[in-house]
Image 1 (cartoon, rainbow, N blue to C red):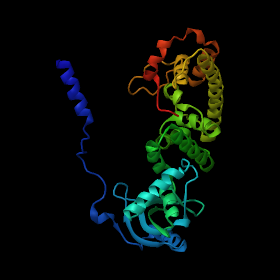
Image 2 (cartoon, rainbow, N blue to C red):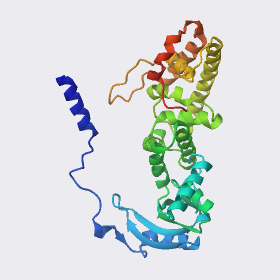
Image 3 (cartoon, rainbow, N blue to C red):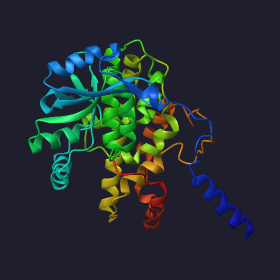
Image 4 (spheres, one colour):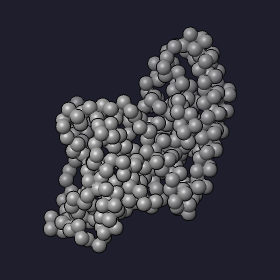
Length: 331
């Protein structure tokens, strides 16, 4: 009993978010910034030239970077090309809610792109909603730092709806960065990419939007790691990983069809089969250990061999009861 009580207390302590004791960032007087700031002069000119109007300026409280508050014509802003795909249903629902409230209160984050255009890395659906409502202008926080688009997208990636959206955002971002910074190493962008397996899955989803990535995510989390190769070189290697996984998935589909022919009916059949052929299924990675459970190339070789040798006749009806323990979010 004492053990259970202490466990509950421990969980309670972990759940609390303690405020940081040492304070950081700017004071109020340091945040105020005039529109005549040299750091913002090119941005003020661009906003005005686009048909917008500068409203105010300030220094961001954490980093001290200069930001411009502005009204911008809806047509002057475009979403970054590596965001997740637009959901018309979500955009229309958002437009209806904005109409009901009578207010467009959430400013877009806008960055000044290297091509001279104004990009929003986090406002695709709000921008679409504004266009659906016929708005002339939207409010925006505009930054002269084009790299902010990648750092903000990393935050959005964590809040994306599902594994496919997250993976597609990350691979599009990686391909864009590979063109802009071909000598940069993949590992330098670990914060922006969130997780290495998203890059591999993104390549597959880009070619096959119906791919069931959720079944493979637990496997890849244990073997996929960020590379110290340059981005272009790393992406070429990941193309090979993606091709091999696609081949394994073809074998998995064959196995699932065989199980269905035997009378098995479950939405988790693919997840079950992938778990069975996963060579690192029972490997536990210790906290703080960044090493893969097995080199990914070797793991894929073993997985492909296990798929070819899979004996569908060995599967029993009761086996599928364990699927919940190995299933992950749907892809």
